[in-house]
Image (cartoon, rainbow, N blue to C red):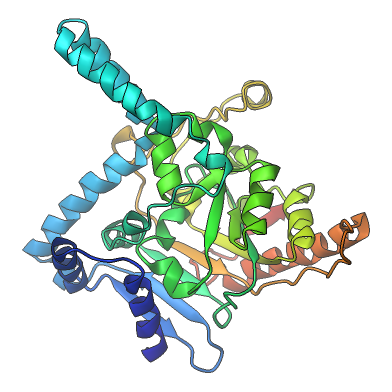
Length: 378
């Protein structure tokens, strides 16, 4: 565990903690929610979370309440703009002072809303992203993350492909709180997010603070040219509709998704397959007619899906989640001034797809998937 402890120390050292934050970190550490195991022979690393008898004490129950409030507010972040609009309408029309204050706040906010950060390198807030409070949410499911290789070379660039997309991409939560820095020290990453997410006030800020940028090709190229790595969800929004908690088949849309492979070759980045087990069980949903779903996705770029978690809200149902990071797959070297050929793209894509399937088959039993569970690449 020596190497794992050093990884965690490095993760914590990236932020300068004020005394109150240090007290909060000590209080959370006392719950003993996180464990790190490192295989000294292979260099593989596992970070896991679980509530312990000590965390079930009165103090632990208090932090459980904090987690509920924190998690409930966080998972509904897409509605922050709506809540603000309702408040302005409800109070501003009766009190000019409230209306004036709201107008002033909007005027102050507009420059930030229109600054185009999502098309650059984002606006990450590392102090929040690496804050220890994320351990409460990670222990709620609980989460387990496995790096199957020795630490990656931080001098290289990587494109992490996450599968499957899931409904709300809850698996992203599991790399916060310094976990990413523990698994991949020195690897600076940006997450490609759907463009509409940056058009919604409140939702936009959460995405930017957590290291997300627009998923457009130009933005992805800017990230890689800056020497940073990136995380992508090749299945995209269409994969949301295939997230079925009652199905024994996991579907990954990958056959025709080759843009991220082409980018990796063009910028000399290695591909890292990532598979998420268990997230599909966090929500319940009915089936919306496919014609309606496809029309909305094609016309408005909005995935219409009705779903619910606990208490018929978006607060997820607790379901163990396992995130497995596979071995990096090196892209073929290109001569200066040349573009990837179709043959190069197809060959690397085939290797990557095989690695995703292999990752699933090797780890599904350990991730509590029964033998009846299957993976289908579409």
